[in-house]
Amino acid sequence: MKRVSLVFILALSVGLSTQMASAQTLKTVTDRGILSCGVSQGLPGFSSPDDKGNWTGIDVDVCRAIAAAIFNDPSKVKFVPLSAKDRFTALQSGEIDVLSRNTTWTLSRDTSLGANFTGVTYYDGQGFLVKKSLKVNSALELNSASICVQTGTTTEQNLADYFKSNNMKYEVIAFGSADETVKAYESGRCDVFTSDVSQLYAERLKLANPADHVVLPEVISKEPLGPMVRHGDDQWFDLVKWVLFAMIDAEELGITQRNVDDMAKSDKPELKRVFGTDGNLGEQLGVTKDWVSRIIKAEGNYGEMFDRNVGAGSKLGIARGLNQLWNKGGIQYAPPIR
Image 1 (cartoon, rainbow, N blue to C red):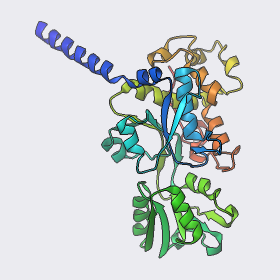
Image 2: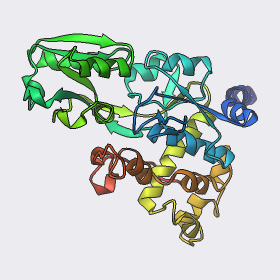
Image 3: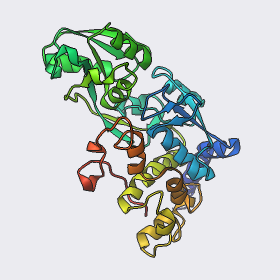
Image 4: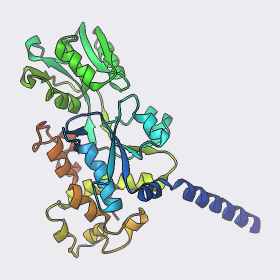
C-alpha cells in the first residue's frame, strides 16, 4: 500500500509540475502587457483595419474581450495580419498568443497542427458568388464553370467533393490571398468566386458594383469558425475558451453592455456566480472575479458583437441563422458558468 501511495504521489507531483511548467502563456502576456492576436489581412465583419489602422470585426472583438478579461483594457492587443498560408506557423512559433482568423475547425487541424480550437464564434458554410448577368440561380447550374479559390483553405477540397458528387466538371483558378482571388473574379478571369458564405458577403462589399453580384442559395459544407491556441497550456486554453462562452452566456442571461452594472447587483444565484459576487470562478481561470463584467463592458455580449459586425447593424446585414442562440432557433450554445 505504501509503495502504491508513493507512486501515486510521485505521479501527481510530476503531473502538477508539468501543468505548472506549461501554464506560461497567461504569464507571458501579462508580463508583456499586451496580447498578440493573429487576424486576417482584411475581411470586413471579421477582422479588417480602416485607413487609420483601427481594427474591427468579430475576430478582433474576441481578442479585445480576452484583453479586457486580463487587463481590464480591451485596447491592449497587437493585431498581426496573417495570410491563410502563414497563420498556423505564426501560432506554432509563438509569434502570436491566439489565432482569431476566420479559421474552420476540422479534425486534421485539431490533431496535426499542435493547436486546439477553443470554440465556435461563427457557424458558416461554403457557397458561391456569381455575376447576376450570368443568370445562374443554383450551384447545380455551374457545370464547366471556372472557379476562383484561395489556396491554403478548406475551400478546394469542399469544391472537389461537391462537383464530383454532382457529376459536374469545373476549372480551378487558385490564388494565394483573398484580395488576389476577388480581383481575379471581378476582372473576369473566372465565372465564380467560392469561399465561406460570410466571406462572400464581406468581399462583395469591395466590388465596384456589389449589387451586380449574388450569393447562390446552396451551402455545400460545414465551416465552424473559431479561435485557436497552442497545445500544452491548459490554463490559456481554458481562459480563451471561457471568454467566448461568457459572451454567449451573457446574451442568454440578458446581460448587455448597457445594463451590465445593474445586472451585477442582482441577488439571483446564477448572476452572482457570473459576476463573481459568489465564488471565485474568475480566479480559477487566472483572472479577477469580475472578469465577465470586464468583458461585457468592453465588447458586449455575443449578440451585440454579431449585430454590429456582420448582422443587422452592419453593412453586411447577415441574418443570425445558425448563429442564433440555441433557445431562439439557432445552435449557438455555451456551457454554464457555475
